[in-house]
Length: 272
Ligand code: HEM
Ligand SMILES: N[C@@H](CC(=O)c1ccccc1NC=O)C(=O)O
Image 1 (tube, rainbow, N blue to C red):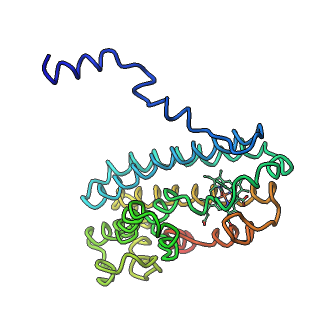
Image 2 (tube, protein in one colour):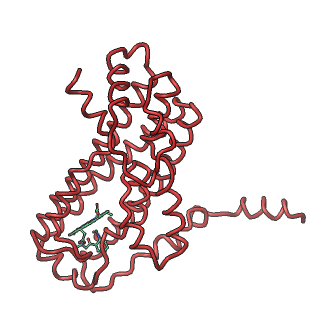
Image 3 (cartoon, rainbow, N blue to C red):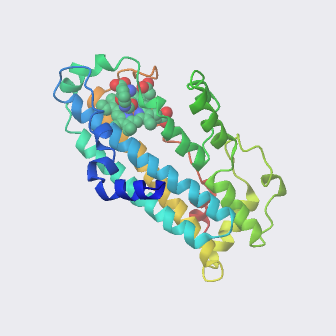
């Protein structure tokens, strides 16, 4: 049988579990304590990491599509990102069934591990334009992750390519934004604010850019809802204890809430 024949034969016999690699997926919930609720804790985090994998897949494709001027394709992907984010926000309801006493019974077995080290969470923040250089240090000892992370740290974010789309439409965007140092978090620019204001004032003329802006607002809105639910769930479970990752805990999570990804898209609402 030729190579193709063997392959077809394998496909014919392939099972559901083989296709989805369920052996690995369903044998990856190793509790370090004997505690009943540690299973909930592990599953919630794994589900979240899987959804984040899909978010990144969609966000990166959307960035490429916007760069090529294929906005309709990008809208489809960004709408999917929003729906996934809704799942992630709702997942806090499941975790909230964990009481403080139950969590404290197995918290010790987590050591210094913390969501702070979630690599995919940082990749998403980079794709959305929040670039914090100290994040790279966390992965110093893992060259594979570090080089992947660096690539997205140095690349334009979804907002950078959206600003470029404004420029391509003919808006007089500050030229220094086009080849700026993308490792720096975008700080806002009056020419971008003026351009979005024009788009929102004349929606029928700039329908695609308007839709792009509203998709970005959806994503930032949901991301903030996720951050808020995280902060509140943490408060109800550990109060103001310091975090396993070494931060002040709730105080730190509250501060993170201040960050805005797409500042002009929020400011434009006041000006309309
Ligand atoms: C009992 C549940 C949880 C508690 C008590 C908790 C607590 C904390 C604390 C205190 C921090 C600050 C860093 C530190 O010092 O550790 C943190 C950060 C973080 N946690 Fe959680 N967390 C919980 C569940 C989750 C879940 C389910 C996720 C989703 C995967 C998650 C993702 C993150 C992320 C991404 C950060 C980094 C935030 C940032 O730096 O902006 N956490 N968490
Ligand atoms: N930072 C949490 C620990 C924690 O939540 C955590 C630990 C191991 C794996 C994932 C975690 N989730 C998110 O921060 C704490 O301080 O209790």
